[in-house]
Image (cartoon, rainbow over all chains, first blue to last red):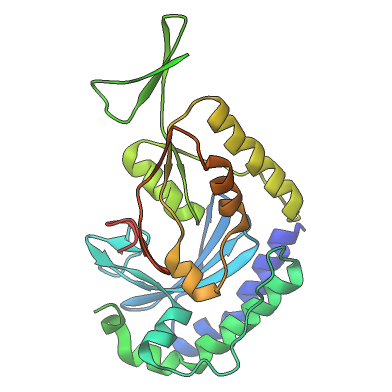
Length: 140
Length: 131
């Protein structure tokens, strides 16, 4: 199994709580140029994980769905903001970052990827109820 | 070698070598985060870097390939459009892409290079794409 496939499986295993405990959809996996995208769809919002193989990095974004579907645009769709990095939402909303810490290394390695993933997951789960309560107004 | 702009398709350049026109060249789009670069390239009919598979990830190999590509764009006289940093990603991670920084270093002083993003400190981007 390739490194990227192993890491994809690691990510899916780590984020299985989102499906089991918070009624998001089973993950939809998309492969783009040097990126794997994993989307967990809810009613109005989705949680999107970007596994960027070119940068060897992982990003967690919250997506505002359009009629229950992923928007066509990336950060902006139909003239409205549709994606935000979850870390930026936490800061905007004044929620606690707790012990959230990710690697600042430029030459990233597999361990940096995994450690960052675990940090992102912990931050997301610690604010999941606030996220769901706030809903689409995160994009207002 | 002369680069001409097509009257019927502004932004699309034609290369003229010894008075003979070659096929029109799409502009090359660079920027931070390939997903937004590709979206912008699709919108304007441009061309973006297509990284080769790099699995397991080898940082130096990825950098060497990317460097060769940007040098090729310059050598071929392509128009290069820079959509700039992904400020939202930078805000989230606290770091920038070393690959994009390398591209910018090579493009510094290149005559056929154009920036289309706005910047105000650590914020900015391209209207309609980022905000």
